Image (cartoon, rainbow over all chains, first blue to last red; front, side, top):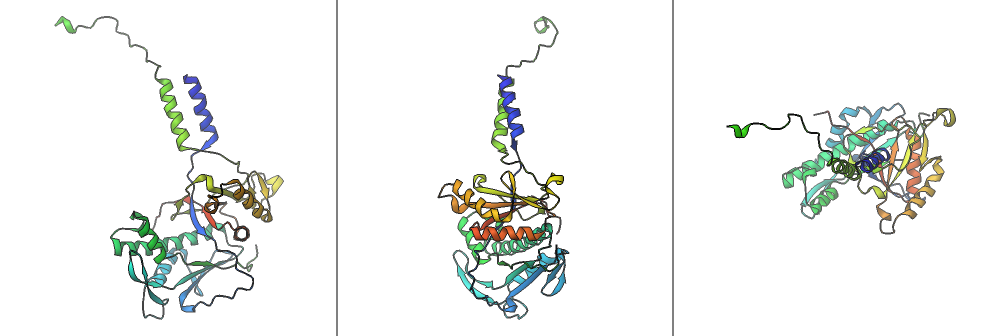
Amino acid sequence: MADIAFLMLIFFLVTTTMDVDTGIIRQLSPPPPPDAPIPDINKRNMMSILVNSHDALLINGKPGDINTLRMEVKDFMSIHPDDPAYPVVEFKSFDYLGEIPVTKGVISLKNDRGTSYEMYIKVQNELAAAFKDLRDDLAMQKFGRKYDKLIDENIIEAINLAIPLRISEAEPEDIGGK
Amino acid sequence: MSRFKKQGSKEVPAISTSSMPDIIFMLLFFFMVTTTMKETTVMVRNTLPGASEVEKLEKKSLVSFIYVGPPHNKTVYGTESRIQLNDRFANVSEIQEFVAKEREARDEVDRKFITTSLKVHEETKMGLVTDIKQELRKSGAFKINYSTRKIVERRM
């Protein structure tokens, strides 16, 4: 009996893996129709992040640093009504949240074909962290607990709608070569 | 007081092994529950980049994997990053077909929940990854997952 159990145990040890798959989940947009007009986004509402083939960052035309990216994105996407340096703010009402100000800001991410995948993931990670911070703040303000401590699915959904992951990825360009 | 006097031999009795199958079975069930089957042999080097803001991938059966990285067998396949679909190397143009097949293999109700997990080696250039993403967009597999290692945040 013990032998058979041992045999099966060893079989399972060899053929299976224990790793849990984790990752950054993203939704791709459907390909635009060929005659689609270029969306007109107010310069004020857009934060452009460029990553070149040497993995260097350019944020809104100025050289940036990956370590401060999170703060800069968070600052940009935070609510500042009547300040021309920040995106336009409008009031929208959501279930469970009531009428709250939301920013019209968009993060535009563009990378070169020569950018390393590691750097790309770092940037994506910093963006995700910044949005998570914003959601945390909203959840804290409305419900007194952090976003990932929320239990009610409807509330989570409402916060996701109030602070959507507004990251637009441009088609990459081949500037720096391979 | 003689009542408490020890009688018989002083030798330690042998440990009973009758419960060993139970213990082994318990271990077996533990491993059966916590692990998953290896489905493909990865033929590319696959060191995943680290990230802190990760989500767990739910519903393993609805995930199809695309491996990208420099091949293990350098002498045959070179050092440039390659795409591996199922058990063989493939070109970017074959991804649409792969997605269609993966979709075909799932139940109709589950098809819209299919996630494509990109397991990309960290040194791969974004050019190849972007090509893959464009193909996925064309074939309608919009939900993707950049597979990463979870690292604990060190700042703040």
